[in-house]
Image (cartoon, rainbow, N blue to C red):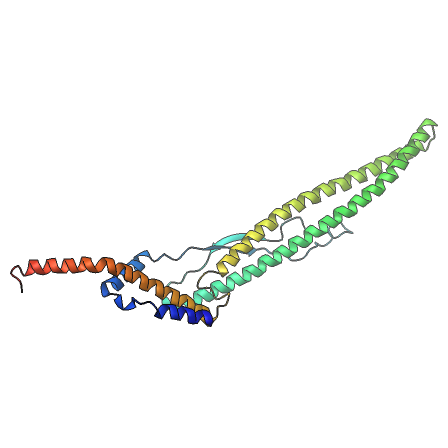
Length: 264
């Protein structure tokens, strides 16, 4: 309220408000109409195909394991916000755009949460795979040592341990390939999260545009903005009046002299 009172005092303390002339007001009004910016065409991100859930059901490839989906948690396309076609549709259009922006902000937040959860599970899976590889390497070292000893002594069990060593090497390579795949997916998810954060910023910027129903403004804020516009318009009228009034007076005097050469 103190801010509002200060603005009102500043408005009424303009000592040249009475000097505003009709030509200045008309010129200011005409200039404002000419320079009035057209409504912008705002395109906003729209979430499509939101895949809720962190796991897929077990498949034939992984019959006993729950699989982390490899695809993105959602896809995003852009579409322009609706524009009102007449004065009667202003409020309805604003309400529709407000609902759309609120819904998409929630959808993007949910998509970010799903991607973050999936990425966290992939990191945990890599940690567990690294532990498995360490255990398998110990078994491989023991199997290779035993195989070497049996091979030197022509032990018939050498072939079994050679097969065991090959099997362990295949298991280690499979887990390493899985780690590489998870690391690539994590990089892809980080890129997607960066995109989603950019989209969320776009939505937040559109929610803060003039005419939005949210963030909610207090009555003092609305009056303060209105007073600022009034003061700016008065100052524009004063400036243009100081320029236009002498010109119109000179033009009127010249026209009068032309119309009445001998005087009135």
